[in-house]
Picture 1 (cartoon, helix red, strand yellow):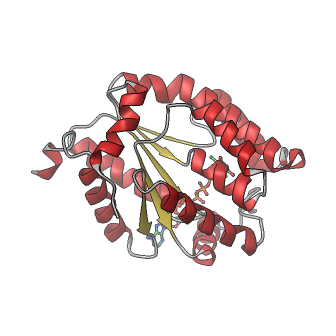
Picture 2: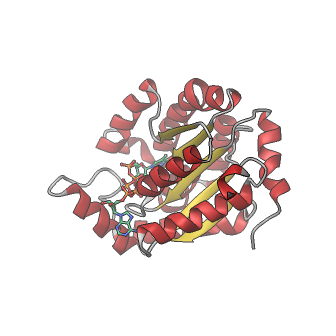
Length: 233
Ligand code: T5A
């Protein structure tokens, strides 16, 4: 099912930058932050300079928008209005952090990116797909990830993990949605993976952390064989 490496390299050529851009996607509590940390360590051990970041956020202005979005203050704007705010945060994140880091040769690893807007505001939130697609073209342009790891997990299991981690803290804007919303998200992410098999790799996130990490490392090395020669030793 994995697409040829040339598909991976096409995105980097389009961006004309030496760094590589890897994103993690999935539902709530799927283990994105956990696996991002593990991949970053392995890449650093292989001699790669890594910039780890997240969305919404990742730059000071985008973090301000993150607080508004996750507090629910922007929910009254509707799904497309929220998508526009996620897009504004993404523009700043790309301009001030992602593009300069890639241009300088670092690898950027990002916890969520534009697929989350497609899934949360588009498919699950029911904003019109053509509007979400147009917004993505304008906001992301050629800055598409080279590789996206989709951590696939039953939404009830993911929400239980997120709740356990939060202790008694209240659910945020999206964690608080009904189970049907989270089920729609899972379907939406898997649809994206089917539509873009050259970029998106689906990983079963119901297993032990180290097993998932090993698979992600194998997928990453397979996607970037030339860059990760040292990691194979
Ligand atoms: N959003 C975001 C949009 O709606 N549109 C957008 O365009 C974008 C970019 C961001 C929210 O914004 C929405 C989506 C989100 O709702 P967030 O606080 O950044 O919110 O939260 P999430 O990205 O959803 O991430 P979470 O923190 O909920 O989960 P992670 O990062 O997937 O999971 P992680 O690694 O923190 O793990 C959760 C718990 O599970 C444990 C961990 O130790 C932790 O306690 N865990 C495991 N337990 C058992 N087995 C494993 N394999 C485990 N892996 C981790």
